[in-house]
Image (cartoon, rainbow, N blue to C red; front, top):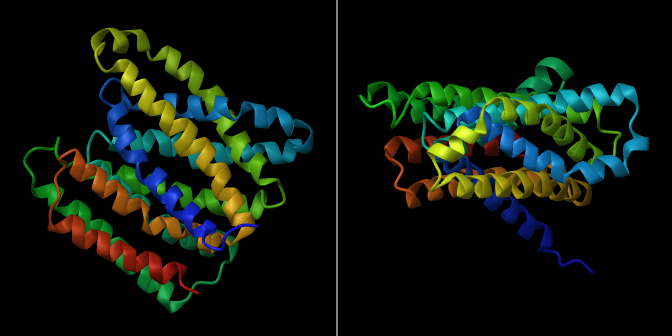
Length: 292
């Protein structure tokens, strides 16, 4: 018999795993370019999921395949590249805070394209979310050293979060009839096949030669990111949604930014008043959007 607190335990674990994703990207960037970091992440995740793809190969028709590929592109491929690129421009903690706005963009795109009802408190949630993002990024305009904080990186992270919001609606509206394992495995599998030639063409041998001391450790961090942070955690999340509700499962959104900021502090990333205030406003936005 499952303990009543077990779902809450899983939510916390997912928050810790996904909140750690941004520092793993940072570690991967020590030896590899953003496009290589994204490719390695997708390859580890997608090839790990290939047995699941093979297991369910007879249950997916051609019409579903195009939406599974689109889900992989919008929900995994492009965001992986955007967050990796942002990791060169902004602290990993700020990337994690901006990622927490996913429920906000899920609501907006659901309202615009799929007729999801939007309430007055949702509008306030959008306001607080945008205010939080602005407070996180605006001080970067006044910093002389763009290596510390380049607001363009924040914009890239926000675009990635917007794509996550679109993908959630695609899954709900177009792929909701499929087994959660299919919805998890096929998009990652598609992206792994796309990422492999990109990684080979990027000339990774040069990276191993120039960053011999850290290259293999960076690969290890990205393997953890892909297998645990993308593949396994996505399966666990979908199972949690089945056993509880999507709203309850999504409460890990409150944990992710705290974990990402904490990792940033461990690695001595800049932490100012704007990070604390931006985090608070983003929390208010999430609460307004997700509250029943």
